[in-house]
Length: 325
Ligand code: UDP
Ligand code: MG
Image 1 (cartoon, helix red, strand yellow):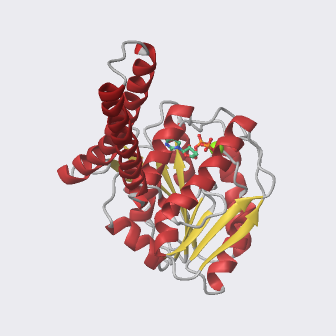
Image 2 (image 1 turned 30 degrees about the vertical axis):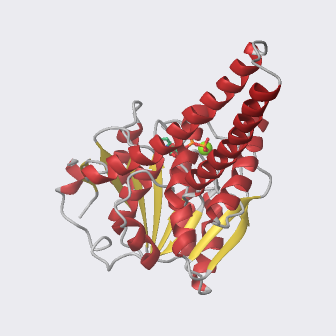
């Protein structure tokens, strides 16, 4: 624990639980944190409602944690920092923030200033208006076409496969009522996609348009591989359609193969044996082999997640919570 935890509490921090908790996952964001802090503080002070900001340091390799601890000292009335023992990924970092948050309204956003903190009151207002989950979509998304095009395709496929309606699944600037956050935390899921789970449980969801900026500094933590993994989490976590689709493909291929067998049998009887067409045979064989391996992979995606979940290991380990009590 940091020394901030053992100092005497002052009157300001002894006040009752905050109304609004802002949860922010942080992984190697040292260059973005100072400006984020400044803008956040301004927003929080302007809102004039009891707020807390819960940062989760997701095992950063730069000095993000030191900077965050500095924030606790600067603004002990609002800042709390959850320290992970290593990197568990963005969604687990948010999950730990959820566990720690005390507010009735919980807002998530990214640490890289792609989601302007100034939009928080807009989301909070939607919750105040009676919604339990408030999503957002980015007005003019400031990412390269290599990020926007795949995510457009993924949004489409996800909606078809999982039936979860979200205009922009990649935008993490979202607000939730405590009841929704509680269900998410209690699910105990390890490989999950938080906005989708919230949308799944939401009774009165709503979406607002928000601004989007280019990353303030540094580069995205997601490469193509990580993005594919994340989307598998989303697909397998909310739908059996990939498996079912595969069964269907299997049935169609089996039916077609059966027709081919009948044809070959008749040909053998009435025309005689055929020796040519070896490469045609290989082509068909390779194709079918590809289908089988893909199927095995899809089954594996589910089995792996079942295995992970069934061992019931801790989803993450919190080394310390830095706050001024
Ligand atoms: N993040 C995290 N753990 C990780 C990767 C990312 O906590 O393993 C945080 C990161 O610090 C940022 C947010 O998740 O606050 C979104 O990450 P990033 O900006 O890299 O993703 P993108 O905006 O490109 O989707
Ligand atoms: Mg980002």
